[in-house]
Image (cartoon, rainbow, N blue to C red; front, top):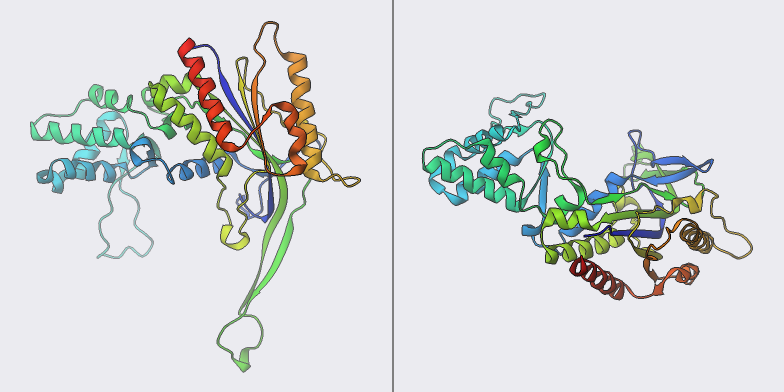
Amino acid sequence: MTKLFLDLHVLQTVPPSNVNRDDTGSPKSAMFGGSRRARVSSQAWKRAVRLDFQEYLSPEKLGVRSKRLIERIGEGIAAHAPELEEQSEELAQKLLDKLGLKAEKPKRNAKGEDDEEDPSAELQYLVFLSNQQIRNLAEYAATTAQAGEEPTKKAALAIAKVDHSIDVALFGRMVADLTDLKVDAAAQVAHAISVHPVETEFDYFTAVDDIENDAHAGAGMIGTIEFNSSTLYRYATVNIPALLETLGDETALTEAIEAFIISFVRSMPTGKQNTFAHRTLPHAVVATLRTDQPINLVGAFESPARAHGGVTVLRAAASQLAEHAQRLDETYLAPGAEAPKQWVVTAHADAEPLAALGEHVPMTELLSGVREAVANAVSSS
C-alpha cells in the first residue's frame, strides 16, 4: 500500500479547568511563539482516547496496560483449567519469565500488618497486551502444564506478536529490554496547546462545616486551586499502511480508524473534572487524507490568535488555521502529488472560515467519507 496518512486538526474551547497538571498542581503550559500557552500532554489525551474506546468497542478488540498481568493471565489459566487454579499465578509468572518479563513482589505498606494478604507478584514495568493475547497466553500456559511440559520463549513470543488489539496497534508497545515485543505506534498525538497566551489563575475556596458550632465559627477548611481557560489546537495523525500491517485485516483497519476519529474528537482528560465540569466538544474538526506526509498545522498560531474588533478568538484561530493550511499546500505540494482530501466539521459559526479547506459535513459523513476513501486506497494498492 502506498503512503497514506490521516491528519486530524481540532479547535476546542475549554472553560476554567485544570485538565492536566504538573507535579506542583499547576496546569501544564509551554512557551510557543514567545508567549506562555496552556498545554495538555499527549499522554493525557491518548489515555482519554483509550478509555473512550471502552464505551463502545468490545473488550476482545482492546488491550490492557498493566504491571498486574500475572493476575490477569492467572485468571485465564484458572478459567481454562480449573484444576490449576491454586498454581495459576505461579504458572503465569513462569510463562512471563520465559518471555523475558521479570516480576517481583510489591513492597508492603509502611504499617506492615502480619494479617495483610500476600500480594501477587507484579511486573517491573507496565506492559501492553491485547485481551486476546492475554487469553492465548493463558491457554498456552494451561495446556503445557496439563501436558507436564515447560513453556518456551519461542512459543510465548509467537503468541504475543499476533492478534494485536486496536489500541495496541494505534499507540504501540515499547518494552525496553525485550525489543521482540515492540509494536510501532500507527498513531501520533501532539501536545495540545492554546491558540492564544494564557495566565494561570487561582480559585480561593472555603468549605463550611454542615454542623454548626458557635465556638468554632468560620470555614472548616480553606484552599486554592490553580486553573486556566483556553481555546486549544489539537492534532493527531494515523499512518494507515502501518496500522493495516499491524492489524492485518481491512475490516479491523476501518474499524480502528473510525474508532480513533470518534474518540479523539469526543474524549477529554479527567483532571479536576469534578471541580470544573470542563467537558466540551470541539468547535471544529478538519480531517485530511494525505499521500505525502503528515503535517501538524500548529505554526498557524505562532502569532497568537486574538479577539479584536468584534472578531472572537475562535474566528481568528479558524481564519489563521485555514490560511496556514492553504499556504503550505500551495507551497510544498510536490509536482504530481495528489491534493489532500479534506472534510470539515464545524459546530460554531465562528469556525466557518475552515470550510474553505474542504467539504463541510456532519460527523457521520466525515466518518463515511474517510472509510470509503481508505477502502478505495487499500483495494487499489
